[in-house]
Image 1 (cartoon, rainbow, N blue to C red):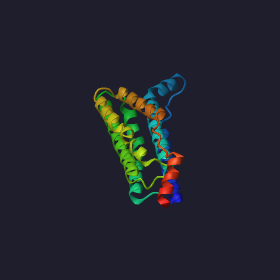
Image 2 (image 1 turned 90 degrees about the vertical axis):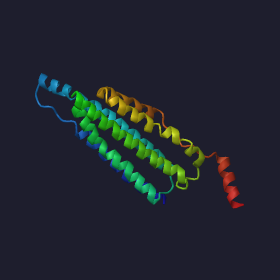
Image 3 (image 1 turned 135 degrees about the vertical axis):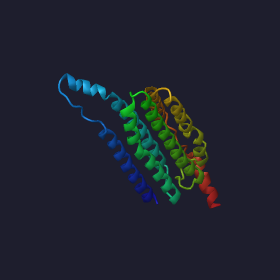
Image 4 (image 1 turned 60 degrees about the vertical axis):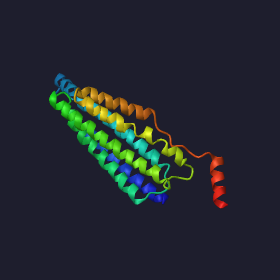
Length: 214
């Protein structure tokens, strides 16, 4: 079963790698030479900004995903489908990123693009929350060293994105650039403030094993 867990994580890593690669493929080489090239490069700043933010978002997703799987010893069928749901949502991010980058400075279109981008992050947050909720609910997928009650206690903090991202949808109606900044700050928060999965203290684990033998 541990080999099966490694197989699922390897497949997921491949999807994350492809998605991040697609992000950079959306950056086009501008035409022109000399000063015209400088001008063309500057005009693409929305693409650069959107790329950095989305790369950071996907990177944090991957770190959280890897952290969870490092504490699992087995997978089951519902978890496989929930994992596919997370990967499906992640794979759409390059599209929403490109839409936002193309229309970030286009007035009313910018708000529509920002709403799409933000709404999809809400979908991601809910998908990842469902994934984590299931893992902590069943409990038997964890390694024996994981404090299952402590892991369940992280659900609320883990689900903060389900609150923060809807607020970016509201912000999208007013300013697309500020919405992109908000997503950047949220991604920075999650990058710097990872949620640890509690582990059982060695003495407690030995006592539990002793109780089982009795």
